Length: 89
Image 1 (cartoon, helix red, strand yellow):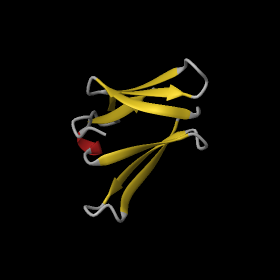
Image 2 (image 1 turned 60 degrees about the vertical axis):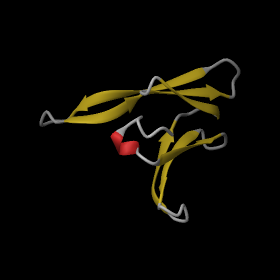
Image 3 (image 1 turned 90 degrees about the vertical axis):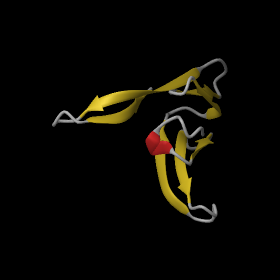
């Protein structure tokens, strides 16, 4: 995935799963021999393809024909007013 997508997602990979109906965000060590971090992002649909668009969108093509999913960055405000990046679909 492009490094300019998000500061927190630098050097991360996205893996789409048909069976798991999810995206997996994974970060490897420098030798790509060990997983340092993984996150399951449940989508609820079988994902056929993933594209990045405009620097802040992830476009998902689902198995059910013409359906698309769009994940977009958003700013979430925590209880103390600190902004934390989040994602919506």
